[in-house]
Image (cartoon, rainbow, N blue to C red; front, side, top):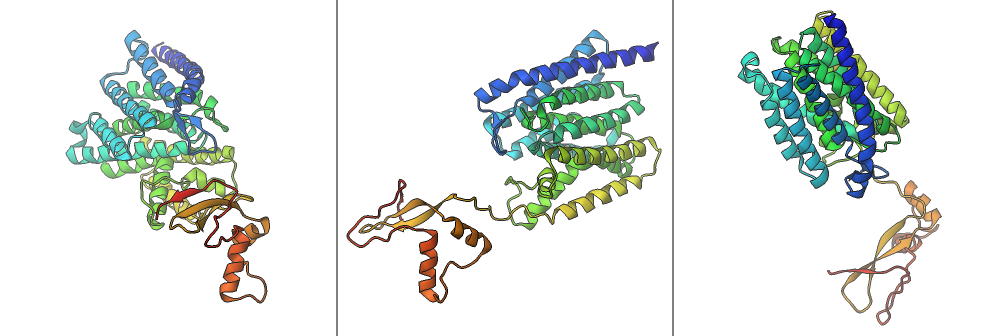
Length: 411
């Protein structure tokens, strides 16, 4: 009877979380657009308050179930939920006021330090767990650059980590992750391509912290090597995305904190996959890795199974590193370019927006010289500049006439 009661209570809780998140995410879209809390890195501005819906619904439903005695959380799950809510609030501040990444990392590390059970892990393993939670939580934020990815990976990971917690008879974290999975599923109704709303730093950091913190609690008491393998298998996709981004930026000589279209989803799109195909591929990869992690946690497979997951992730990262993402921007047909023009009788330099002829555009892309046949040296260079920038040269006594407004630069 108690088992049936628990299943019925979990079903009602998950259904309420799903419906409330779907409704609240739809209602928060208009305020986000009005307040300009949007992600401008995409082709069109996408509101970022979807994470607020996930955080509020997960916290309220879990707290209400605990207060009513329907699904008691327990002290460990209560601390985890409180710390995750604080991290979500910090992410909301980052969405609104554009906080630097180091402040987000520091705040997440402090919250993780309040959750890790040092009495069972020890000081060294506890410190490593804090660093792992902070870094992987930031990696979940990196998945929010594409429609539907972070929600799909989050749902799959929540079921996997919840299964590990249920095996350890940790009912509080298991129910909490079930509520989170239902909330993310309701959010995906609005985040599927083309996305009407996104999680933002608020929802992605909350999701990542809740998943990684619960995984650490579930693996408490196991060996450090086997525990690390299972944790990496449960979060293989966000870890692989973070490693890919850091390696590619390092090899390209770019600052590590400088954003760019260099994540897993961006590279898969460059290989020809559609937006929905990217979600299917990354969701399938997360599902395979999570299944291996759950089987390794329960002892159904040996610890070497996590090595296969790590090897597959490493092979994928090395393969996607060959996809070019930092090349020069392609010129659009008829796009305006700025040509330096020196004003007559003055030492200031002006910038004029001129139009490239279509033939010159095509030759410029192909790297073909614009000089006519037989022209060499300075004459060829002059012909090239005349073809690309058709601005009439001025004498020493007349002003330059251009069709667009000039922006004068001192110099």
